[in-house]
Image 1 (cartoon, rainbow, N blue to C red):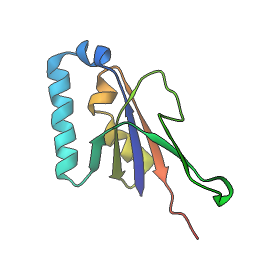
Image 2: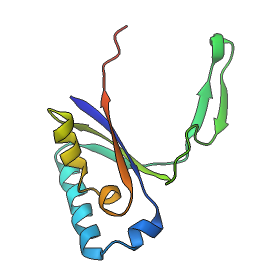
Image 3: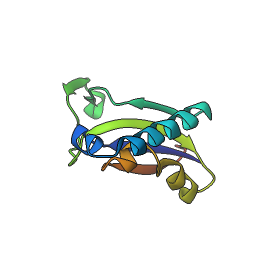
Amino acid sequence: MKFVTIGYGDREGYDQTDASVRDKAHAHDERLRAAGVEMGIAGSPVQVRNHDNAGTTVENGAFLQAALPIAGFAIIEAATLDEAIELVSNTPCAVAHGVVEVWPLQSAQG
């Protein structure tokens, strides 16, 4: 199964986390990347609309609001949701006073 993960966190939470814990979390991310996980830091979003296929409009900014800023995304593969949770539980956002959402990615059937 594939999962989309969204990491939320801010500098304040990161800075208050012990440097050794952060270093282990970054090393964990490197192991995930080496295993083929696609991950990246979140850039600035845009909202795209094309209601009734009548013309595309684009607005700068996120549609959703959260208590913490989005820090990054990843697409991971795991056999179960529990395994996916285990994979992200030691990432920087999870250990540095942030949060990681794990979304099962379901294939769209046309």
